[in-house]
Length: 98
Image (cartoon, rainbow, N blue to C red):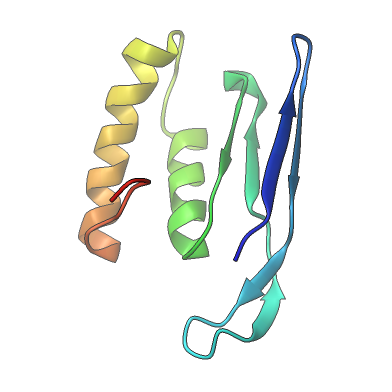
């Protein structure tokens, strides 16, 4: 289970997360990892739970693979392409609400 909390104000956001990584097989503590990945040049963060390789790949592709001037027009189509490529590596992805 991941603890992920935030506090949003007009001037800032504070993001809090644990760093514990569990084994996928035994669900026992395995290591520590980053779960919140900042993208300051886009004024956003990517936070992930579950398979860390997937979250890190998503952050890396977003961080290095695009030039964004408008989130709705530039970021969302790019992210759809990244999610499609992730599905080819990690299999079908579930989203919140699935």
